[in-house]
Image (cartoon, rainbow, N blue to C red; front, side):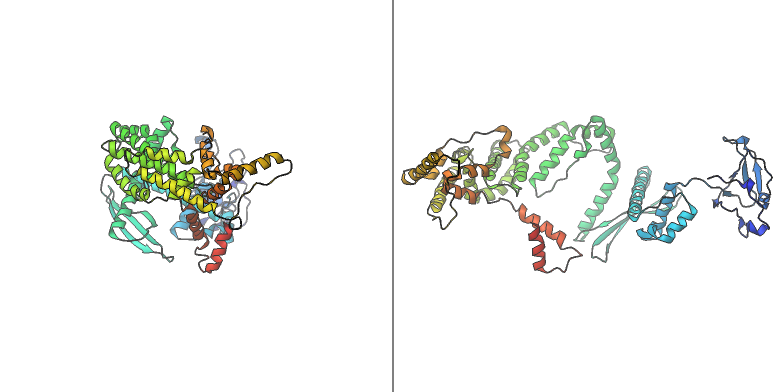
Length: 533
C-alpha cells in the first residue's frame, strides 16, 4: 500500500491535521523516533501541495536515493511517517518479550481485543495460537542460551554462581542456578542459567551433583557441535547417539561401550581439534574397550531376549544363562589381567542365581525339538573342568524331568485336558488307527512316551529362522503323538522368566492414576487397567 501525501485534500482548519503531540497524517501510522526520518512521496506527479501538513516537512530531492524518489523530512519531531510491509517475525518477537517480561498467559495472543489492536496497527499480520506462541518462547530461549554460551566462552574473568531450592504448588522441587559476572565496562550482570526439577533427596551431596550436571551441560554444548560436525565429515550417522551407563545394569554398560566404539574415529578427531578434550581413549584403551564390549554382549542379548512377554521365554533361558556362566568361568580362569577383577565380581553376583536356578527352566529346553535333553547333557559336560558341580546339576535336571513326567502320566483325563487323536473327515482312517495302536504300544512297552520323544532325531537348525523358531507350533502339530509329554510342555512353556509383563501394568497404572484421577476407587483402577490388557 502506498501513501501519497501530495494528493492530501485540504480538510479545513489546522486542528484537523495537527495535535498537541505533533503532526498527524490520516491513514499513516507513526513509529518510534529516529535520528533521520523520511516519508516517501511520488516524484513523478507534480501537483500543488494544498495541505497545511507540508509546512512541517522539508522536501528532499530523490536524486541521492537508489529509487530516484523524493523524500519528505519532518522539521520538528524527526518522526518517521510511513506505511510498509509488516515484518511478521519482528512483531512476534516483540509479543514474545511482552509475554515473558510481564508474565502474561499464553492465551493472551488469542484475546479478541489484542488481536483487534494488532490488526489495526498491522493489517497484514497473521495471528498465532497459544501453542505457536510457546514455540516462539522456546526458540527465543534457545537463541539466548547460545548467546550466553558464546559470551561465557569469550569471557576472560570468573563467574559467581548462586543456587536455591523452591517447592511448587504441586509439591515438586525445583532448583535455580544463577550466574553473576562483571564485564570489561565494570557493569554487573545476572543470568539465570537453569530452572529445573530437583528430585529428592535435597541433600548437600545431591544438590552438588545437580549443579555439576548443569554446568557440564552448559560447557559441553560447543563440544557437541564440533563432534556432530566431525561425524558429518566422516559420514557417521549422528542419530545413533551415545548412550549413558547405568551402574546397576550390565546391558547398559554394553550399550555405552558399543556406541562409543561406533564413534571411535570421531572421538579421535575431536581430540585433535579440541585442546580441552583430554579424555579421549588411547589406541590401547580402544582395544580394551573392544574386548570388553565382546565380553558383555551376551548379557545384553539375554536381557533383550528374555524381556519378551508375547512369546515363550522359558526354553530360551538355559542356553543363554549357560553361555554367560561359561564366559565368566573362562574369564576368571584365563582372562586378561585388566578384566579379571571385574569378572570375579560379576561371577560372585552370578553364582547366586546359577546355584539357585530353577530346574524347571532347564527342563523347558528339553521341549525344544532342536535341543532336547542331549543339549543339556552336552552343556554341563563342557563345564566339568571349570565347575565341579556341573555333573551333579545335570543329573538333577534329568531326574526332575522324569519325576515330572510320572506326575503327568498319572493324571486322569477328567483331571486334566488331555490332547487326544481324533478322526477328521477326509483323513485316512487306516493311518488314524495305526497311530492309535502306536500310542497303546508306548503305554504297554518298556519305553515311555518321554523316552520315545527324546530318542527321535532332533529337528535340524535353520540359520535363517533360528531366532524365530516356533516351539508352540511344533507341539500343536505333534502333541497328539505324545499326549502326556505335550501336557508337560504346555504348562512349562507358559512360564515367563522375567517380570516385564507386570512392570508394564505398573506403567499403565501411573498413567491411569494421575493428578486428574487420583481419587479413583481401587476397584475402578483395577477395572481400567485389567480391561486394557
